[in-house]
Image (cartoon, rainbow, N blue to C red):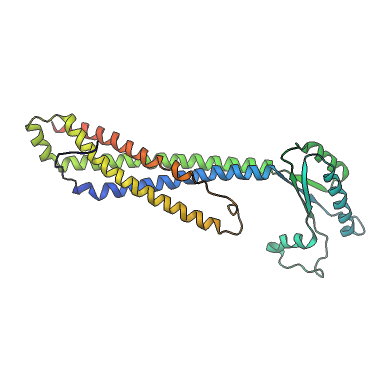
Length: 296
């Protein structure tokens, strides 16, 4: 399909066109993979956050013994949670776990330095089978004590999803820009190649070759160079993603510590070099036809 018997001079584009195409395909593939990872990450976090809620128990500073009072309140809240349909389990963090959470801000907190009672956290896991009436639970807890707050992460996840969506839109525009730049580069390289082969083209015209014939063979040669570059860019992008995946799996904390990169990502980004090949073919044909008409 891409074979040509015409002895075009290809030295001018043999190194430049495959390199620039490989670079553009690599950038577009990494950008597209980033958008996919962001989408999968949002889905994963939505799934995990929707199955968990957090209850914060504030100390009653008006009480004579706030530490004892908060322990009693935690027991009562835990009892309420056990009797609430839709709750799979709950866990109240102890003093040590609470102080460990504050270490990044307050450093080590010894018992002799703990002059004020600390808020306590209760993590709640929602059942996948029995639906939870969060509004009723919130009202029950609020009626029990106004020093207790319930966080469902819904507002936080909405903002997070909006941020990811905006980022994906930006990445999509970047991909379009990269592919547009690729088309412009291919057009420039094609025109330069035609000028370099002007003597060959004139001879072909003299022996009766039509522009369509010349256009077909020359555009095939340009597409062949673009495809070879696109394959190199795709392979480089896959290797880069594999390295990132390996390092991300070794992270001991953070937003992607438990996130598994989908193996389908390599198949999805395969569309990038295919699209680049189609763009190179269309761009080359249009450029060749326009340039040949100007040569006549």
